[in-house]
Length: 484
Image (cartoon, rainbow, N blue to C red; front, side, top):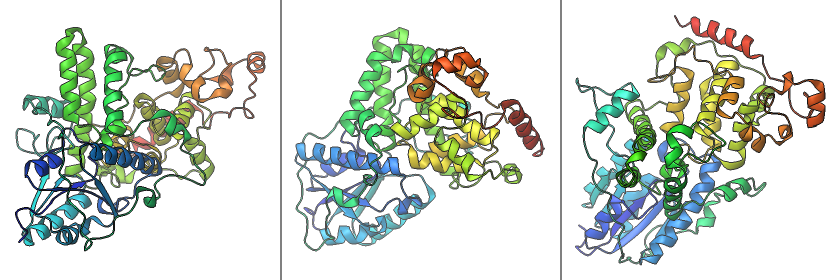
């Protein structure tokens, strides 16, 4: 049985922050000396290795979190170890308690259950907390007590449950415990080799992002000051800086959804005219909650169709060159290509454009949604085990609350509607920079003289469309009709 003054371990995972951090607060409030640990297992306990963009973000998030802990007397100890090693680590460190934030994927849940049971068998206090969501996935149900399947009633029921409570303040000081020589050897952050080197493709990510809790807070304040007032009207315009871009920070737990909600409510209370924009913004937090609700109740969300009838869908297997054209933004449809190039350069893509590029892959190309979900998993900084597959299945029509199968985005009309001046396209497809806005979303229709003046030769400087939209739409509708 550990001694009363034995250390408390805070086991960090996707919750790299000090504020509104229930596990850290429990450790500090226990009165024990504190050890903050991070066990890197490259996603094995989640059942899926991290993508390249997520690995880049994780490196910088860990560095920022380590520095923040040191400022208040703490220390982040990093180990390359399986999560299942936690009981042995706690024993070697003589820990009296271990606190952590819950996860919701099936593999992660099983790992955490086994760890908790082993710790308790050793006489170690083991507590997990909700630090990732506004509410636990099992707290929102139908009147019959069943999981929710449609977003709008889910969010309505979620809100009807009332206030989710005030965020916890960050601790002002941590009494750090010494590391025991009996324990596993700690390693330097660089030893995890999370950053790309040969080649170093992360220049665009470095220019775009500031990972860490301070970066998350700054991003939220910038959104409030510069964009919230326009959010409801401009959130679908990718050329406008009208979204929060908080998703990577939420994915790594650098800010909690409860903190985001409270701060947004405060803005609304101070400026009532922001009520519509605030409701729209918080509805996106609601979608994140819904995605984790789906993941908890459907553990195979990333690998199986949520609607079994899609198991018989006649997906095509196009040539590898076609898939590569989509991945690298060479489909010949400017709004699609701009989105895929934004993703490749920055590790992010505007949400409206995510729907457009996903629809193009699934419905124009008839490629299995799992191919796109895998690519997003590797290239998005914010890819998480819930939002990524839930959103792809929504577009494909195979998910909960899915888009109707006959909704097949016309990439030309989508571009003209949401990027009317062509600013977004020109930012990421520079070869079209001089094409007039009338033709920037359909450059193949431009007269030869206009293309010549713009310095564009279709099929040379910019590709011809990978597939004709009308033909693709007819083919997709015929394929979906086979589902009955």
